Image (tube, rainbow, N blue to C red; front, top):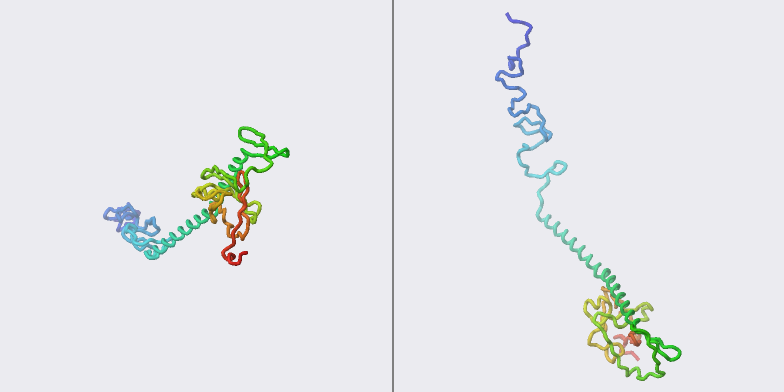
Length: 270
């Protein structure tokens, strides 16, 4: 006789303890600690052998393409397009560098040149102020020197004609020794003339060609100066006209030079 109160028999679990006839746990038939419906970390269902749903290859297999953010595969890069893109970026960078260099050469160096010209003018003014003379109504000249004040009697007539005077210029390369005025450019157009024509000299203002005459001496008093950058003292040189005055001031004299006739005026010049 069979008892009727026991649990119903299970052909795969005759002992009723959750194990089948072979003694294996039904929840771990794969033998890897996962159950049959364990969820894979990448989102699909992984049973240990089959590929997760939604993926084209097992997670252990290396991928041969790079998916973008939307999951679609990117096409392989074209080496020609990559080269052209890199060349274009290089040209753009070079263009920006050249543009910055032009800005520096035209505008920034002008600011530096104006500062050097102002420093040269200040130094020349201090040099001239250290030895000055004032003629009084009594015919006396009050000479102020660095060592003190000396009063001398001024002659009523010049002892030497101005054309016969022997002028002595004690100049130092890189230092200002005279001033140049161009009245047609305005009363404020004043430049300190520097001795020498090196790159550093011309950065501070118009320079005197060494070996040429000095102001008031017979011959050519030659100057050089920039017209574009580094202060550009001669930027408006092309605006001069025939007979325009160029006044040069030295420590003791004033000299007036005139612009010669232009090339197209020589034939008809009277």
